[in-house]
Length: 137
Image 1 (tube, rainbow, N blue to C red):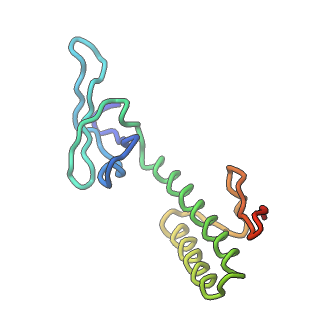
Image 2: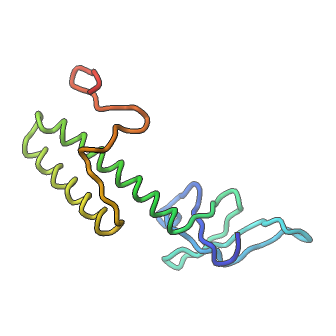
């Protein structure tokens, strides 16, 4: 990692550390090229120092991929909730459907991706939604 590279904290402890930080200072071990500490500046202006084990290199492209995955998971969860709510409460189902529609529209407008909730595969871990009797649908 070099100065002005971007990185993320591996185990964020607060809202500041969830943001992408820029490396502003590197402290090396004496008489070596081993990096002891890196100083990150976050968009809020806060600066903090970390060891190399505490952060990982991350770019805006990495963020885009992570955002698309998170939004896709959100769409999948809302789709499944809408299906469950359909028989439980029609108004709730309609409200969840509205949220899903807004999320799909924002993904298209802000992330440049088209998500089709009806065509999303089931969750990658193989878990489907459970019916009232506990069976998988």
